[in-house]
Image 1 (cartoon, rainbow, N blue to C red):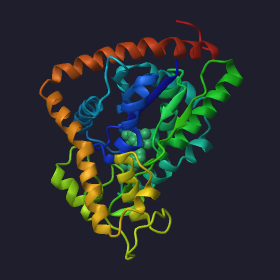
Image 2 (cartoon, protein in one colour; image 1 turned 90 degrees about the horizontal axis):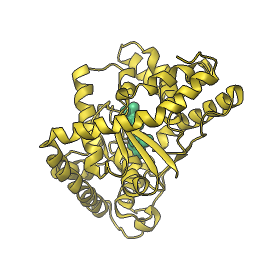
Image 3 (cartoon, rainbow, N blue to C red; image 1 turned 180 degrees about the vertical axis):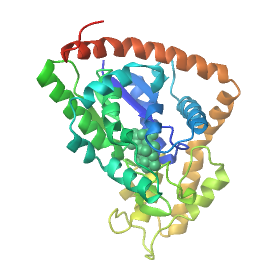
Image 4 (cartoon, helix red, strand yellow; image 1 turned 90 degrees about the vertical axis):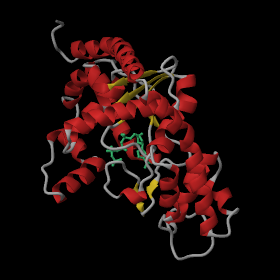
Length: 331
Ligand code: AQP
């Protein structure tokens, strides 16, 4: 059976980008056809300036939202990365296989280290090495497929390279994974700045739709989305990025094609109104389920405990094999 792994980072409140770019597929496709693991990758949240209490809160919220979105612990494994030691154990070995140069080429490293420096903060070493930890997350489970948004494709490519290199040097140990991207909304853009990703760790709230935004807040954000001065509704990602973003969001919510939808609209106002309502409807059941789950925190704890136990059992043989292959004495 195909093995699928993916995760969310508790660096901010989850956004519509996280949902349309990744989580929705996990719920509607992956958990039904694959042996799937979904993880709150909390160690990754420590790579930038963080508040411990906030990371704890967001980790719990992220896990709750995974279940609220429809992940079923009877069908897939839902857990928290730091509860399974194998991730950190394997990460070190992969740092011994990766090179400094390939880590520094990562776009997220370049962007986030620049952002940290602009804020006057220091860049953590873990920000540089985090793709090795992400590769460990994936390779520890002999993952075949990693369903992610476009921004994570480069990191999955690195995980592939490290798997191939390790296997060539030390003998076949890892499955070589591949990234799977959604057909529409692989990169949902910020509504106020449609050439930038809708990112949860950005500060500009008005351009970001959070999964727990009230319906009226969603409507306001979508209605105020930046478009351009044109009149006609055409789908052109390069020349009309704001409009293209709205068409992609609407298409993703409705399961249609953005090009086809563009032909249905004669004005920006009508498109924005329908997009706002489509987003509100997509979020409604998720928000209702989130409220129910919050009323029963013991349930979440039980799911995460069982998930970590199952995940550990799956990862340990592969990580132990990697330790032996690379030349470390068995304990
Ligand atoms: N805007 C997006 N469009 C499409 N997919 C997206 N994803 C994230 N943003 C978009 C996908 O969601 C999954 C989980 O993402 P993540 O938790 O690893 O983190 P992130 O949101 O990419 O990044 P950061 O570092 O927490 O902060 P921001 O968001 O500020 O960059 C992934 O599959 C991701 O592709």
